[in-house]
Amino acid sequence: VVSTQYLEFSLPNLKCKDELNEEEVSFFGDVVPQAFFDRNEIVWRGRVKPTALEHADRVPEAAKRLAETIALDFWGAKMIEYDKDGKIDLSNAKESKSPVVQDIFNNIIAIKSKPSWVEVPKRSKISNEDELSSEPDYFHPRDRNGKILRNRYTTRRVEEAVSEYVEACDNARKEVMAVLTKLSWAIVDEGHLPSIAQASYLNLILNTAAHHAANSNARGWNMATVFDDIGNDSAGIFRGLWPYWMDKSNSISNSFELDGMFLLTAPNMSGKSTLMRSTAAAALLTNCGLCAPVENGSSLRRFDSMFVRGASADVPTEDKSAFGGEMSDISAMLRSCGDRSLVFVDEIGRGTSPKDGTCLAAAILENMSESGMSGMFATHLHGILNIPYSQAAERRLRQKRMAITRNSQGQFEWTYILEDGVCTNSLALVTAEKFGLPPSILKRASELSSYWGNGVDASSSHGSKTFGMNSDIQHATQILEDIVGEKSSVHIPPSFIPPPTFEGISCVYILQIGNKDDGWRYYVGETDSLSRRLQQHRAKGEEWKSMYAVAIQIKDGKSSARNIESLVVQQMSKRGFVMQSVSDGMTIRSKGKIEKSNCKMR
Image (cartoon, rainbow, N blue to C red; front, top):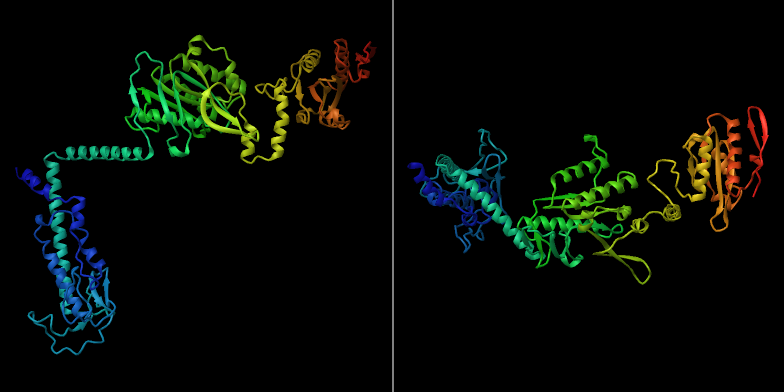
């Protein structure tokens, strides 16, 4: 078949990348601007071998004649001589600097003015036999539109040499284009295109693999062994694992066996998220048959799916909050992952209350462990450590932490080393100080931490009933709510201001004064401006500044508030509370009558 024969003939004539450099563009030194030769030849040179062309061999001859003509007419060379590099020797030329200019738009070579060394020509016509030795005649050339270029000069033989060279280059370009076009149609018609596409794809894969191998050797990465899961709960053994984006010499390596579900707790900035990303990346690379940032001797199970869930933000375009996005991702994980899955969940439940977040995180962790998933579950919700998990989940849960130490100055130091155990101190204030949080904020946070440790339950709603409270104030609050008949009391810790809704409305409040060591004292009052009244109490001295307040609104007005105040004083006194004053509990106004009480101050 003609096409096949042509294909078999033409393919060997195609040039590889190294051969492209062997067929150089015409070059004769400084006599002709090299950009002129490049512009005319580079578009077709190196596409096919010269043996497959008929007109390409005319270009070198035309280029040589052009260079010699320019050397004589524009440079004033006395004779044409070449050096060992093939350059025309201009040492005998009358011009010391190049007088040649090129017109890119018209593709011509010219000079700006007649040479000063030119004599009046002896004759106006030049014969072909002695044209290189006769005196040239200079005139203005024309552009591609036939317009005379009056700021340029050329000679007849330079103009003819340029025309001959440009025509030879144009013929060579057309011939190269025709050969490649015919070859392209032959490839398509004979069905060779799929084979070439597959070869190109294979070349891309092999090229990528070669670069990966070279880069892995330079980085010290190794190939881990892959095994199939045959009754083995272990997901693999990682030896000398380090972060894939870091140099091995500048990172901390970890070695461990991933034999279940790791419950990972650690301080802020201690490297738990880095460890999870590094483990996930190493497992993915190994399951793809590639080298990973691990040492020799590592072995990993073959997984059917991997899941990584880290920090996220809200997605307004999808009508999702950050917490909603978390739950959507976790739902997808629970639906698609099983006992051959490798999963990594980092700090789930941060977008809601600690109580709800802890319960949800614990339930998710329990389900992951029961389902046979392997991986890591990192959290700062330390309540998750005290959850009564099912026996099936407990068997596969492994408590891990990132180790920390103290230096000689007693400061915390992060080791980035994984070890057995739990961590219930996130060291958030240490991290905040490291990143420049103002000392006043850090000091206040440290002060408020005492209320958290004294029975705080941050999961309660606004107006938490247990924030900084002890059992005595809780008992007093119960008395107040029972008398009013509503569970709507609001708690106001020391230095806090009451809600604006307590301005201009009657309310009854209880103050806890003193301290636990010396004994608590209590004061009951009523007011229409709680913020002003608390400010007055706090101005009485240091002891009153640290008082704790509980208040409840009285909808029936000031008279009802005074009666409730008296009833609260009486009930608290009867139940053994040490009252600061009982004068307000001596009388109770009921239906216009004044009743005496038996309340006494203790």
